[in-house]
Length: 197
Image (cartoon, rainbow, N blue to C red):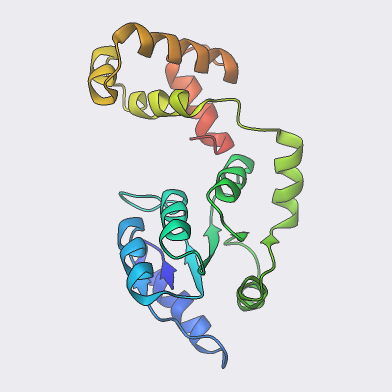
């Protein structure tokens, strides 16, 4: 199963994989929520997900697919080879993490390896993830930074997340300090660049 929001890329991947005698694309999704629904219905052996999709991203979809269809192995294929994304993908139960600038011939081989029970991770990204260390942000700090990324006021963030304004300020302050930023906007930028959000 493929989940990619860009129709041309999704079609190219389906065509490329369709040329392989031993691989069949059983479903195609344009977003994470659709991918979860299709995985439940089609029960694919492997789900190939992009990270950046509208609505539910590939990392959230990966975790839901692993819960709903435990036999399905999830692969992440992304433009964004960030160490934080790799860590989050592994936490979501992904069996593979590949960047889109890898040679196309490697994709089918990676799918076969994942279907056989192996893990496949871009070696350069694995090295970067090990040297970068773990995500310093707690899940709640990530929630608050994400909710405030659009410039929302403290009151708006508090209302959206059902927290007090003081609690939101504390989480923001902690997140800003942890990423070494000067303000919320810089903290969001830094956290996104590292793949922590």
